[in-house]
Length: 143
Image (cartoon, rainbow, N blue to C red; front, side, top):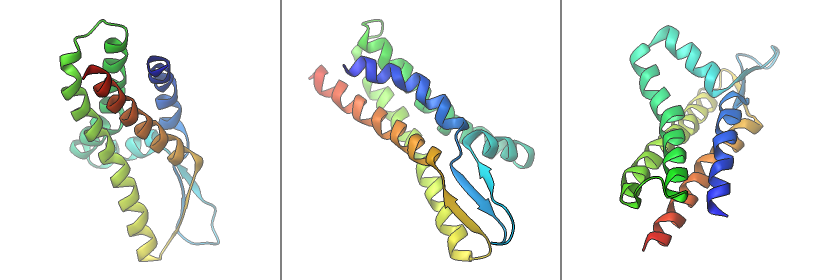
């Protein structure tokens, strides 16, 4: 069961990357723009390449590599001794959820614009938390 739930994350992560995380606008009178992980990364690549590399690693590569690694362990194609490294990747993937929450808090605190949370943020958070739960369960199976 765990291995199939983990495999579903290989499909759900890319969906979550393109799904709208937030709707943001400068003033209540103007329409809101939808922001996804990918659109945010595209904007970041235009302004700060170094930060874009870091966020890309944490938001895209870390959770996906962890999911692939767990899948390889579940199908006995990778040694279970790699679980600590995969758990580290999972912790790095949680950093982007913290950053998104921080940006929402800062934007609402300034009060200049309007931000609404979209369904993609819940999907993305759910994928990260499911991946964390799967890795905890895999660690317990190892013991």
